[in-house]
Image (cartoon, rainbow, N blue to C red; front, side, top):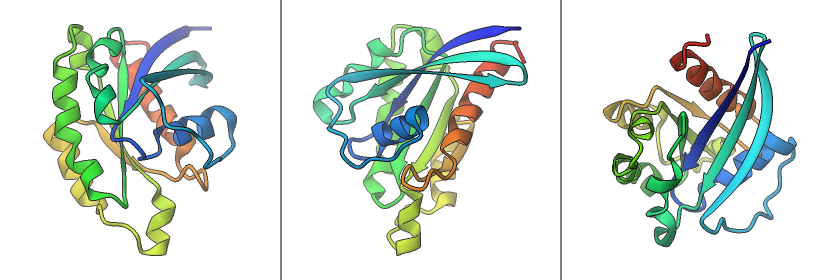
Length: 179
């Protein structure tokens, strides 16, 4: 059986739900009681895709301004990334370009070209009429920066959580020539 290990980074503004998403994915449980990420946190999860065992090393970056400049050094060796925004906060998608520019400062050229998946979090809020970022607008923004796909999710309900990590893992397998 083939085995692959990938480092992937999840980044975006503070409070968009990055840590909640990862915890929902890793533990299968939802909690609103997570504390703000200070700097970076690290998680692992093993999955299987088409008979290939994949170990995901998930690096969760704090989105607050004082931590943003850590990103270029922590993406060294990364094979993929997730940019997450909150569908109920317009500014969180409007900062996409700033985050991409930070990646461009990475000393690792691989990190500058890694595939990035765009994630719209808190999809459950659209049912409450709190959506302010339309899917088509977010998709257009992502295309400007070569982001390969967009998935909206809800960590609260679990909608599309597994799909997100399957999608990025599959893309990393394709790029590395394993699939």
